[in-house]
Length: 177
Image (cartoon, rainbow, N blue to C red; front, side):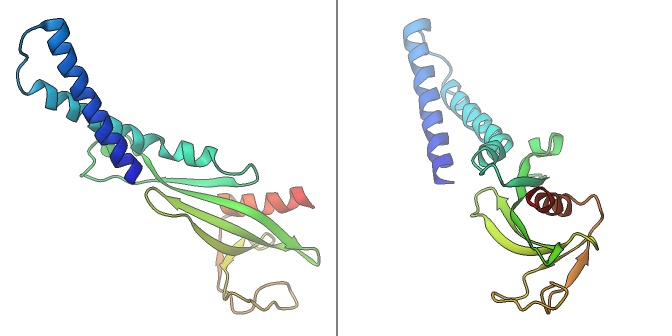
């Protein structure tokens, strides 16, 4: 966020300087006083809007090849009127390191990475039951497992068969087996 602020201010200063030079060297007469701050403000606003729409690309391109993006989510706000026209992506969900126990290949453990602009990524360890189509959060830091390979005490949530997280987790294990 600090780099965005510094970049925006530097752009505003650069555009104001450019308008000043163009005014002095090309036109050789005084422009209206509002032109320089208006040009700097418009450039800063355009830069901020552009960053709203492209930040996720740089984040996704920096992910390791074995991490699969499973969801992109956008938010609108009346404080950002451009988001009412075209919704920018503000959150990304990705899946990493799917693995299963050879004795229970239908139970998959994977790390879900939740990324949001201006926030540190959150890593959530989840279990997926590929046979039943369900997921569960890690019940504790040291889970115990039952005879069926499921973590004891975990609350399971049914997922539709076409859910991106379920598909990525189950496909990742099938590809690694």
